[in-house]
Image 1 (cartoon, rainbow, N blue to C red):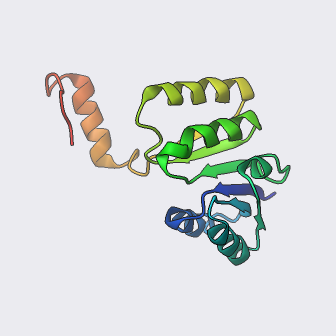
Image 2 (tube, helix red, strand yellow; image 1 turned 30 degrees about the vertical axis):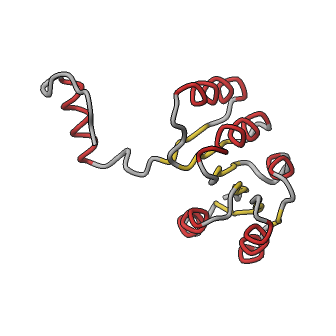
Length: 149
């Protein structure tokens, strides 16, 4: 099976967690890394045998990158997700994806226009407890929900 080229925008601690998870996927290959901290970018790219990019634009425009992981702090997500989607790349966004709805709506619209997936990094979305809670809320058995922690 053909390898899928992945680029990381962000080379901090969370990048290492995704790197370990992707090593378990035989078809996945991290091919490029960019971080505003050049030292971090260089270190991770070297460890992976990946290309170290000078800019996020360089990374998203590489033909060998089919998927971009946006692993930056939330304040940089919108700019990087839009950059990736505009380049026609499938995009994974680390949580928290955004603190407002507007950017997410823009991502959905652009991903549909470009025919790309834009996937939030919610690692609990399939947890049985959350599925049960969703069913309880949807059924109305809990009444009106005003706050949930």
